[in-house]
Every structure is written in structure tokens, then in C-alpha cells.
Length: 287
Ligand code: ZN
Image: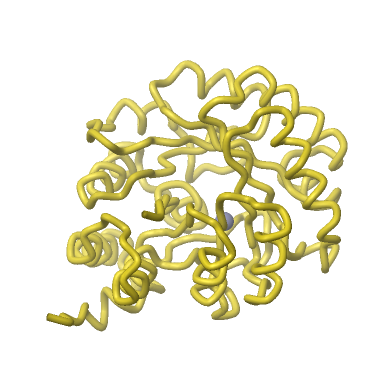
């Protein structure tokens, strides 16, 4: 069975203009946990002034009503984030760094080497239940194409340090399926994080599975983006991904109707039509 990680409460909401209070964000996490999703990225431990949408991560965590079988994750960029993560009850750390100098400068005020050094120290101190996500692995908004050799080198390095999971992220939604196929199979990365900026997100996710990935990131209703990546739009929508996979006989363990109900709720919370299509079109019974 493949595992879908819903990153809506983090990657999704951090790009919304409206800032949702921590209790609303916790409510979203709790609603998602009731759908059978095996993993939810609930918060990001970044400074409040850098990403106001993610302020109060500890309050969000305090509002989580734990569901059995759900792994709750938090995003960490540096030592400060690590300290905050460690003070919570979250299960999995998602340690993120970019594959280029310019992206790390914007996102973490560090060169690639500095970001790599920081991340290496963190992974060494806590390799278990640590996902390393390599952002802009398929293309950078500032530097353009990214050398696959750099990405492979990073994957190998963090695997040697003991990180138990590596995810390759198409942060700005530029990848195409052939590229995903070769980078996932060459690196044996376990996960793929895709944005649907150029409508290739679902084809990329499907290809990632065929290439051996077992973890796919997606965001409820297709919320998402990245405030540090200009013009990056939403993640692939969790319910659209589940619809596609289940229709093809790929078990996800997730209740599609329950996801759709959450997207309808989110539409009213955010007051606008969201990117996902299945919640608007409805599911389709094959029985
Ligand atoms: Zn993303």
C-alpha cells in the first residue's frame, strides 16, 4: 500500500493570504486524521515573522486529538526549528533543504553547503523518523534546471547519515514524468512531493509510484505553494490523487468521500473555490 502524506495544513495554508488561527489549523489536522490518511504534515517550525501563516505551531500541536495509525509530522529548517520540534509530541521530522544555492539563500539564509552542513548535523542527531525533503530537485525558480547529479549526491549523503526517508520535491511544479521517472529510479528516493503548477502534478505522482516511490505528498483541495518560490501554486489535491489511484486499484486506505467533505468545508472557511477538481465534480461509483 502506498502512503499519502497530506501537507495541506503546512504547505497549503502557508501560502494562503488569510492567516488561519492555530485552533482552525488544528481542526483541519483533526478532520484529515479521521479520513484514514497515514500521515499529516501539521506545522512548520519557522519564525512567526517569516511565515505568519505558520505562527503558533505549538498551539496547533496542542490542539491535535491523536488518531491511532496517523503519523504527525512537522517541518524543520534549522537547529532552532529542531529545538521547537523536540519540545512537541510530533512523530516525524521533515527536514528540508533546497538543491541550489539561491533557493537556500531565500528559504533559509544559507548557501547550499551551509544548508547541507546544518541539515547533516540535525540528521546525525536524530536519524530515525526523519524525512529529508530536497526542495527544487527538479528545477529552481532562481537558477533554472538543476543538475540531477547534485540531487543524487544529496540523497546518497543523507541516506549514509541514516535519514530513514528521502523525498524529492518539485517545489515549483516544473517537472515532467520522464524526469520524475529517472530521478526517482536513479536515487531510489522513497517519496515525491509535487505541485500542479503546470498541470503535470498527477502524471508526475503516478510516474513516481511506477518508479518505486511509496510516499506521495498531496494537499487537501490542492491548497499550497511556497512563499519563497514565486508563482508556485498548489500541491496536487489529495482527493484527486486518491480518486485516480483507487480507480486504478492502488490501495490508499483513505476515505474519498470524507476528503471531499473536508474540501467543501475548507471552501467555506477560505471563501473561495479551491484548486481540487474531484470535490467539485464528485466521485464516481464503479460498483
Ligand atoms: Zn511544496
